[in-house]
Length: 583
Image (cartoon, rainbow, N blue to C red; front, top):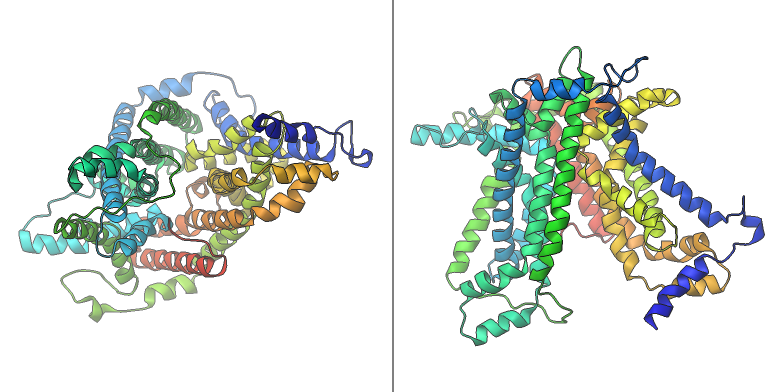
């Protein structure tokens, strides 16, 4: 029966469409599927192919007469310091991964599996950094933990020395880890919630105490989640620009992303061949990580101990130790995300932030006045809102059709379409920006797109396609194929089945994707580093420029505006669209 049910949609999907809907021997559904496939693959290849081509020619690709040559790669690998860039990048990513995974696993166990005071509220607070740009978090860390930071100066006055150095790879790794802990927390907490409680019950009958159950039973069951989140965090750290640029560059530490930025944008005469070669090398590293991820996750299935149970795991009673866990969680929240955000808030409303002077005596609104009085700064806010709203809507609608083609049709290239749509998750945002910049420059009719908000919507939307796919696809797979069968028996083709039935059923998932994409696009800025011009700056590029100009008050004010808009949007989405802001 199962085989027959799965076969019927395939046969029905291949039934000839009505004659008035056929063109060159194919029905409307087929043409729509090919159009979606071509559009999705073009969006993915548009930044990749020009980047590869630029790395292999002897001049900027928009100049005529380029000759193929390996000189760019030779120059890259013989450039003094590039070997250190590679080693420092891997060290930074590895250290970030260790810190983030350890913290996220510990916090997930405390919040989800231990009976601890305020666990639900702490879980919500732990996820809030996911809504804040790493660029904003980096500013906050500098204001609080930098050499002249509020906390650093206060500690030095008490101890006579600051026991940390933010402008070092360990300092950078901790700051980056705070922005990525929510990712690990989501994966680990999700796995812990789905764990089979019968194994813990069996351990209790053998006399195992709660700590032994945690170590011997609970942790092995979440190894796949730990592994997946670790690889995701590692790859995200490799592509991160904000923290390497703000914390590494002052100390002379260059990583992959900052190396590309410095050689591609921070020079009067950028060496585009070198930038292309460095981008291809970075993509190669990301590809290797994906292969490792696939192999590791395949082997990790032997650790799965989750089955279809209707019960939920019983919370572990740790007695007085639960207060130790509570203190650990609270201290992390305070010294991790909370103090940097509080530092931004204080700096936004003060003339100067220092523990030597009471901040309440330095209160001012001048920083916000500067933002709202200067047209370029307010334009960046409007641009970010416009890109996030339009980009989120368009990308959600487009990816919804992509999911239906990939998962609910007999389109011959559906697997290629799904793989292509998920590919941007391993392409650094900086490379997406560079690639689209070159693509628009290379294709004559698209020259006018460069530097416009449309270019940013295309780049941000391409970067967000994997997130939208991940939000919509699970619900599509939960919808029974009997609905497709019923529609086709009444003469509906694939497109009518989608537009009249499936589309309405996946609206909740589309709302979730819309909220997720708005937040992601509103805080995004790395593709805009190469694509934006004076009229299309976004909040991220404006704050970065303000920081480089030494205007920390305006940076804090603009960052607080970004956080406030995001918070209001998430709260409204939760109330109106019934979309949860946390798992």
